[in-house]
Amino acid sequence: MFKAIYPKASRFKPLAQAIAKISDEAPFYVSVDGLEIKTLSPDKTALLIIKLPAIVFEEFSIEDKVSFSVASSELNRVSRRAGRNDSMVMELIKENNVLRIGYRDAKTGIERSFYLNLLNYELKELSEPKIDFNVTVKMLTSDFKHIIRDVKAIGEEAVFHYRDNKLYVISRTMQKEYVGEFSEGNPLTYLSSTKDDVKASYSIDILEAAIKATAASKTLTIQFDQDKPMRIEFEIVGGGSLIYWIVPRVE
Image 1 (cartoon, helix red, strand yellow):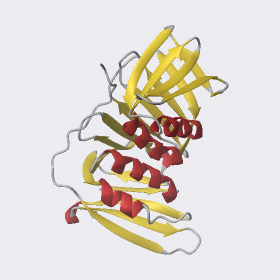
Image 2 (cartoon, rainbow, N blue to C red):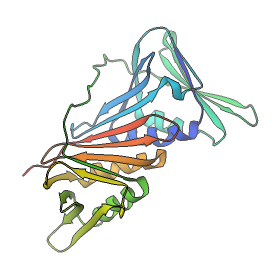
Image 3 (tube, rainbow, N blue to C red):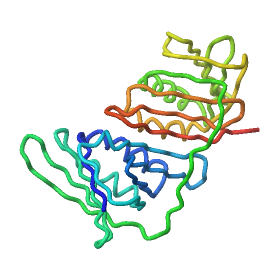
């Protein structure tokens, strides 16, 4: 048995959108510590992890560790029905093989329920990579959104290059080029590196998918290293985190 009440249903909307952008499936892993959703893109170029500790829920009850999965498109569709005054109930009803998503309006008391069929396959929990990074960058999600939209206007690949105590984000094609130069305080809130020169390239399409998470967060942390995966962590408003791992493009 598992039941949880998320106090602000509207905050779950961008999380569901982020999952649907990456994968067809939304695998839930629930324990006494909280709820995690971990999914890998079909081409295995992106890993998405959502962590919601038990403390962020108004109610969180579980008898035993449990895992299950639903279609991400259906979860996204139902999440869009949340109103701004709604709390969100997630309840696993095993005998019916469904996940109940319920909404309750705090002002009117109106309650609604949606039932999502569970996907029938054995889940294999993904583990988060353990990688040491040289470069760490922190910024507002609004600035991240502008950067990614700028590079999207140019090409298919974004180069992240740390040198001279600055972060450069570059995209080039045969006929045009974008170069963004960023430093701590303009507009980065934090920038550090243990090496003088670090460069790695990533797919702009996957970086653009990460924009979906900006609606759930105000700040983020980017970590990268020479030709290594990028880790982007969004701090979810109200508690928890959403993490992207993005495979680098290596020539």
